[in-house]
Image 1: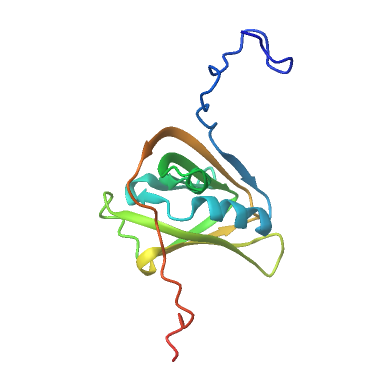
Image 2: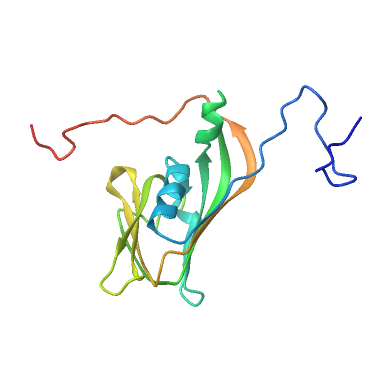
Length: 171
């Protein structure tokens, strides 16, 4: 079997005609635009309350989640993958609708957004979950990393959302 010139000597390559398993996704966000991309990839992730932690001594907030792989969906596969997400420079965490006394409860992440504060680059990172739950992170600046940790597994359904043009409750 011939090895392409850009493949390191001794590297394992997939047999001809097979689709190699996709490499894990790794994203790093340093501003609101980067965070929007990270948010899109994390949309509909499922996180156990017990897998969410704030480490004040390290000024780090972290969570592990079962991420729905939207890129795999475009290829016709429905998969979730175990992923980790953490934020650096976190000075305070506030939460609403997160039952810390129920660590097995599952939260579905809808979006992650950044709101600039009075003294940029500081601000608030808002993690919005279904059912009205949210976590607010006061941060010195946007610094987040997301990484697929594995494993992957097939799922039978794709998350979907009703798009209600009158989401504010108006007529």
